[in-house]
Length: 168
Image (cartoon, rainbow, N blue to C red):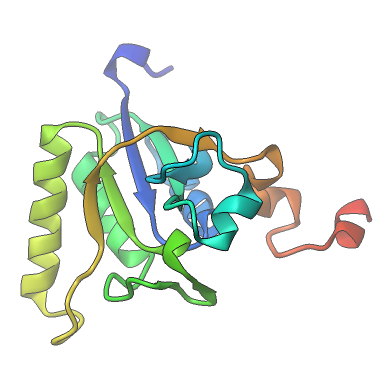
């Protein structure tokens, strides 16, 4: 069992929170994932408000992880592979400011690690001349998304579902 005093938090946004939450949940050492909203100005936002793109929030995933099993640097390395960091307007089929990529740091060490990892990615030229536009911002209030968005793929047989499919 993980010692609660040794656990740390991380928050990432990179498009749809369903995809990011599912990916991080599979990582050994990540003990909790929560889909939610952060970075905006509206308290207790609901999905419909965030989806409109006018609240300033992004769909994000909050993590609790055990740094003895997975380091923050390893989580950052994974984060960069989960999205296109050169797209500021969303990811894949998801467009708009609510899907922009952001690393929300919880302390100075995370900020330094995030900046260093972004610099390494830029230097690597993995994306050629396209600039890395993923923001690195201080963590803000994290609002848990509605229950239907938590572990979405498990609830919908690993794919998008309609209410009819969910009833089957």
